[in-house]
Amino acid sequence: MALAQEKNFTTEDIYALPEGTRAELIDGQIYYMAPPSRNHQKIVSELHAVVHDYISRHNGTCEIYPAPFAVFLNDDDRNYVEPDLSVICSPSKLTDKGCSGAPDWIIEIVSPGSRQMDYYTKLFKYRSVGVRNYWIVDPEKNKITVWNFEEGNTAEFTFSDSVPVGIYEGFSIDFSMLRL
Image 1: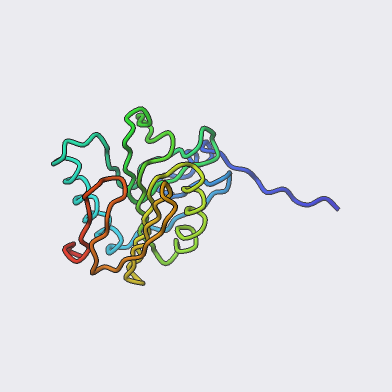
Image 2 (image 1 turned 180 degrees about the vertical axis):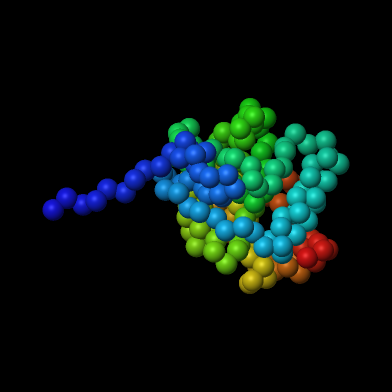
């Protein structure tokens, strides 16, 4: 008996979803996303402000974008994500549609429905496509997990810690100072 084949979706399928439907595409599979909570959005806003301010004060060339911001991870039509925060340091990756290729730094804020996706599916995918740093901010566990894929290390912090930013020497985000 032949096995049923799973449908492989493309970015065309993502763009054909009804208006307001949030979804990501990883290796041809669609993952629907629930709307973020107020606390989730507050964390995104605080982190965006701190990083944007740092880049501006240092005349940096990197740019930070909050979701929804399209990131086409591979040079194909089977991978499309909307990280909570994406920092891109190569202007050549930026187009009117979003980012073509791996951002340098991605931050995901864990929601109850995104735990497995953030800690497993996206972790593997981001590592394999060349993201330099990946942070998972987990408000429920009061934890920030930082992967520095370039150096091959991982570190864990709490919301009371100052967390070093791997792509910027000397820059740390003091979570205890954020208005969370």
